[in-house]
Image (cartoon, rainbow, N blue to C red; front, side):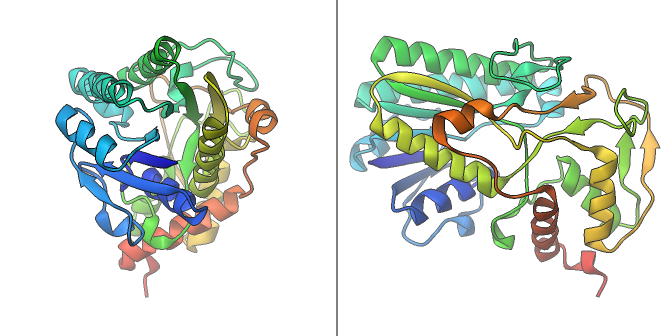
Length: 326
């Protein structure tokens, strides 16, 4: 097997590449480096620089490297940006995926793993979100991920591909500091950023129907997520045609206030969080049911929230030395 990993120089992508390479899989990366970092890639992994919408580039890459499976991670993923720029998100996440699948079918590639998101569910009022929970996305990002799932499954049925759609919950942490998330778009790096620059962590909404009034979320370590990709890739390599749709989460919730307390402890900066008004569209609770992925693959998340925060802080300090206050 040779796997083409789109977006493989990104934060999640680099972890997936490393997990698969360490396990002996042959990997080729396609990345336009708009957010990816070349230095994240292991030595010897071929990098093809360009977008997934470049059909000629895809055709050459699939043929020259004798690709037999694709892990599609490339795409836009910021909720706020998707609301401001829906056309960009549909072009990048749906039109780009269409071009990629056309190239995959033309090349006779039979295995396709799609990076989806818990954003496809919207804000369901359930204790645990299962893969059968109705999908009702509330922003263009979630819409494009759901449309991508539809497209992947339809292509699989029509062209006898083995496919999988992985619905990530909140991904954080780092397997190594140099692989850490350099963006400030998710709650943990947002907390770090505020503390680094002399501010207090911000909590949006403390009047939810939860034990401490703040939102509850499911956080999964990015290294566990990468291992899930490896398990799914090997499942696709060994089975006939079919489709998997799996939640990737720990199956345990952590409140935003609990997370802020843990960040304060790990960073050594016990700033009291600032409480602000709720943000539109935030669910009180969004926690995955991880029963199906465990039953299908024997995969469970091995790393807890403390390890997530500690590894994320180590990576943050690598890129922001001033954070340690030395």
